[in-house]
Image 1 (cartoon, rainbow, N blue to C red):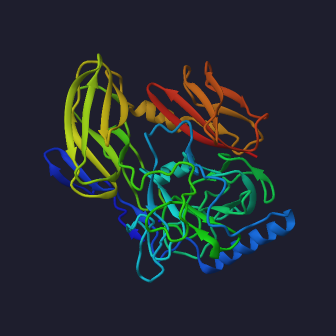
Image 2: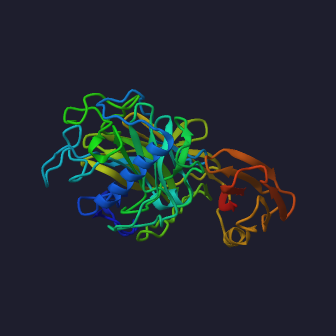
Length: 450
């Protein structure tokens, strides 16, 4: 993933029409001056895979087409509420000349010499990384042939640091490689152990030579970088004729991937600081609010249809956004008058026939000083722990839920005390998330079981 457009969102806008603002989302993309892997790192990866072959009797090949089709190598945690979460920042470069570039579809969504597919997070990539919202999974069943963990995972510029990664060798001898993973998020399985298709491998991070959280997904037909393949079938793929995907996604996927409502603007600090989303779901009614919508692969000529739906499924307000420029990722917002009648409303955004909704409530009390203090008062101790810990500072009536790193709910309770004991001793070691729900707000804290 540097083409760098990373500026505070509150400062980076231009007015398109009355009450509409936005433009290109501030992206951080790797480029030819900042490749995902150095030649030395490729050599290390090759040696590690070769060593695994000798130790565990794995067989490699150099065939053009895979016999075990890939599924998509990412999934979201169950607690992520966005309508989608990614965009393709770079495909594999099919042009052997330098500085020429060409992706499998004869387009230019790549950089010179890029050897994989960069799947980047959107919007709020650091926030998504911090909260393990995008999970890396095995594209096909196989045996772990390489693995490195423990390296710093919030890099923002070109470097020669080692990324965290996993490689999986499949039954046909090919290897799928998953790079830039989040530190200490990798599967507990070791080299030589098998994984099933869709099995958890780690979380998206920004380790190694990376300018922002993304998965670099690379495919080798054998055990060396010289056997590089492009899993995408297209007119300009010179490495292989057939797709390696069980179901190949379109070259572009225009869609609104998040809709949200704010009283104040989100804040996008310089990488690697975490974004402050400032999203609201509770309003007193009347006045104005900002209605944001984030578009992946915005395409000139497309129209976004937007409306506020009131109770009874009737329209309170409706407007449109006409796309005039192609963007990998864009954001827009409109300042709109809020309803005054209490009830639950829906902000509906439709783009490319795909609908993204966000509900909000009129007539509840937004977070005030007391509730903000409540957020700071909640403590999870000890942390790290051996599976037993106490939650203190929560108000009576707070709903407490615990999720594992895959987003599965493993504990739920409505607290009747200000101090509650939670026991995860029967769970595996790793990262868990404790979610508190109170007064229309949610607070999530991370806990580590050693």
